[in-house]
Length: 117
Image (cartoon, rainbow, N blue to C red; front, side, top):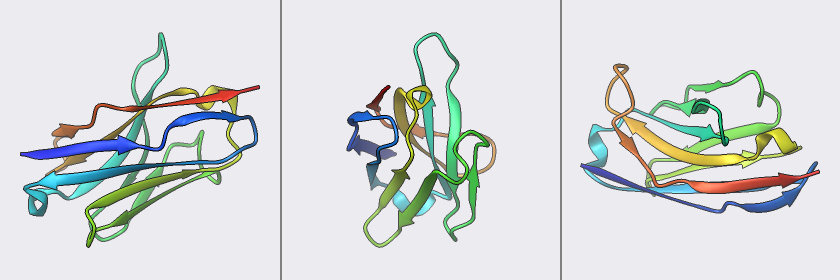
């Protein structure tokens, strides 16, 4: 099993920056990709960014150029640096990890990010 715990959410004004973090524990060697998802009230959960064990990244079009996902395998940490935040970025942000491409296996409890206009 893998446990994921997010931190770093909060309230920020539009145009501001925020970094959310995720620490992983447990059977870490089984993990390949890690990602950040978000879910706003009344909307479906969406993949924001993803990073492989070797550092290959993917970003949703809505966050390209504004968000940066990084991963420190030595510390079992995952980060999402969010710049130029917009009110539409307001959501619960979840850290997730998967062993293969069949789907994400492990999820954190989430951290709330609220962007005020």
